[in-house]
Length: 497
Ligand SMILES: Nc1nc2c(ncn2[C@@H]2O[C@H](COP(=O)(O)OP(=O)(O)OP(=O)(O)O)[C@@H](O)[C@H]2O)c(=O)[nH]1
Ligand SMILES: [Ca+2]
Image: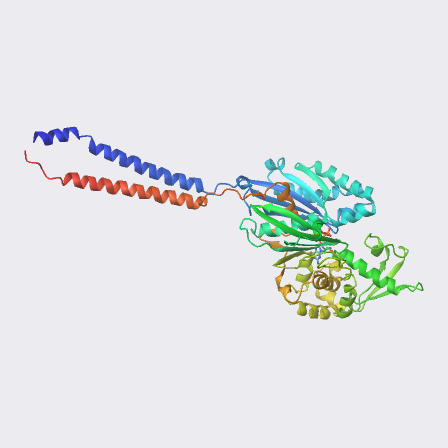
């Protein structure tokens, strides 16, 4: 008895201790749960922003991008928040009144200010890249292109953002950054998946870009990237004057020269324009481009008459491409080396605008050509009646533009009826417009690391869930342990002393 009493006296503190430990454990578990939940509560995401102006030949667009502030180096995190199309033509059209080029951006830059929190303005970089329209102006009149850029720089320096520069990007950059945008938005870099090619059709130039190991020939047409720990050898070529606006002028010039009799008024019968289409135009609007060697005196008018012969239009458009004179193993056109096509291609900008309107984005090559012939024969007044909400500038040219696109892809780049299905005509990937601007900003802000960032073995959510489950397991083990201990101590045989 005395022993038991002694035992009990010695252990009087066991029970409260166990209870105390259990209480602390439960408190720790509850604390863990609350931390896990609060930590993962949707905190107001903090974003960073970037602005890129695409100063194209036909117009300028202002893109606002955003990304989660703490995930700067993660991929797939930069998305387009806003886009504003500047009213009027491209900045190269201000060659004769350069001081107006910068202020023409005002409305869209004010929209950009409204779309970004004020406290972020100071840290938001602004980049302007000018493309083929300014490349052509620089060819024609270098000082005029400088004056236009100066006006743009002065204006953008006056915005509340951090202006990082305005420059004419090369055709190679335009192609390469379009390819980066396509594959970044498709998450192909982070997943080290097969990349897709990029086809960009502008008003003054067109670009083809795709991964190819075949860089033994024309190394100038290759760019090498190391992205997320993987090497990429990318073929890219930009054809200046092969944007659809300039190509139309080249076609008109070819037809005008064939019709120039020098007598009476000039009438051009054009199979790429609809029956009943008749407009008096200025020769200056055809010849005021460095894409055509000088033409007849430019203050002369000509009457542009449509005959709507799609087949003849295809034959005329084919003449824009010179398929002879290839000194490499394989060429696209005009003697330009092009490695064999392979893989999927994303065709955007005017490729999309035109093929979407003509409802040819999912047609085969053969059916596209047949439907174009039928579309081109549609009388102009019928077309206007059925499409009164479409800009006449675009409506009058869809027959030419569609024929040009099909000819460029088939005759120019050598897409076949088999590989035609590898082309996808798109405007966006997710919420972001496809074009060179996103790739340009990602490169300038170093947001695509050369090496894959170390990622924790578990995604954050998985990590928290695992921790909570483990904690609950520990807790239940402790509780079970206590129960077993208590049962064993109360069931211990009474010692008879
Ligand atoms: N049908 C149609 N055409 C469009 C639309 N937007 C632009 N275009 C025309 O499509 C062509 C290409 O447009 P963009 O990709 O903006 O060309 P750009 O960037 O100005 O030209 P580049 O400097 O050569 O890249 C031009 O002839 C535009 O006039 C549209 O919404 N619908
Ligand atoms: Ca463009």
